[in-house]
Image (cartoon, rainbow, N blue to C red; front, side):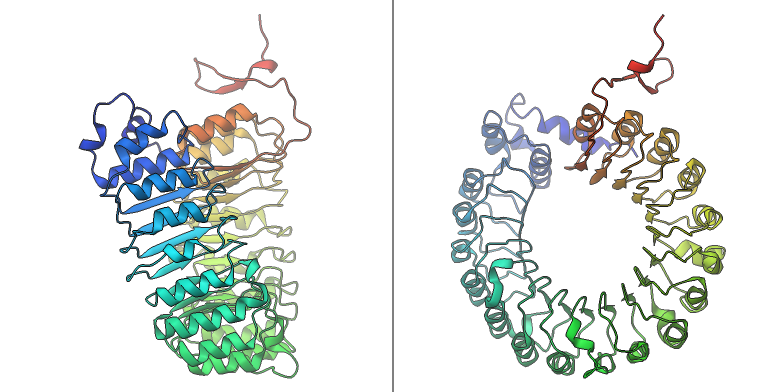
Length: 543
């Protein structure tokens, strides 16, 4: 769980570019890319250090750049990168708020070997960048969260890059009513090359867009319509008949696709479908789900928030499709209880991920056939029990003992969770990466430290656990250096100094949320050299 020798060497090199003579001459291209990524993660592109970075690392051999949430990445930096003559295959710029059209034009204008372009959450990206984005081999374009990108830019990019197969326009809010013009242009320009389309959150999408997709994009494999409230069952049925290769379909919050006047749309789903989300879609009557029984290849099924899900419906559905399911999400289904989950235990024999958030009646006892069977328990990688306030602690102990390949485990809001559960997880679940123990107030530093010592944690939520101190944070810093995010809001005994140390120790940029309105300003942690433990100095007895 400690930093590898390679990572230690890279961080050492990254901090000493100014003192090693001609270091860039001896570095392989991949190492230059990794060094540049590390420097961006740790905000080292300062005016004083940037000349050393550009001299040693910006070279014509670069093939991949990944800039993540660094406000030191500016148009000037992108211009210098473009001037070095590199022919990039992959560009990812995510959350770099200082980047504008001018910088993207300078970087993109010579990139004719580009295959992947991800420009995510860039608020100053509007129009001009599209004039420079021309590559005869471009396959993947992701503009997710670029809230000011306009329709003319997207239309231009797809018309000049007809090889694009993956198009992501989720939450591009400025498109507004123009989203239909854009999607029609995408369908007409990309034609059968388009395989993956994501327009989640684009609320103005209408049936005209689905008709265009039906007409031109017969090879479509995945379609995300999350939140597209104007789409109706008639247009969707037309698309389902035309796009027979469809494998993934997200209809979350598409309220009009299962109205009283069109209750049978689910009977038209293509049989090769592997992923289906009906999150928030209220069925006119539960028997509508009978249309799913022919989906014998279905692997992932999301039924969040369907209030009229009944035991009878699950007993009808799961004997037909349960054997192929690896992911089942029943979050917020208020009718879900232990009786209904008997069908899950009986028929979902290959289940890997189970999500039951806010299913407040569930104790988990009817799931024990899964967790007590060693073969089935070893298949389990993800269990989400957020706010399952009736969940049995004995069941959780069985999970921690037997589900040895568990990677995600969420029990936020379960007040009876204690240190013994975390210690059991630490002993048995060596692949655990993502944990949520929000408001589990009986936890202490001892169990969190042991869990961080034994598991390669990436995402940790400990908000509201008031007994935790800097000892937990420093243990995470020393043992889990590949962390992506840590949430410790309400942990009033955790100091900002410890969190800064954590950020410095991590290989990548780590997102930290720490809101503490009632924090003691006099806290101070120090390491006991005799025991190696971190202790509150202000609470120590001094002789």
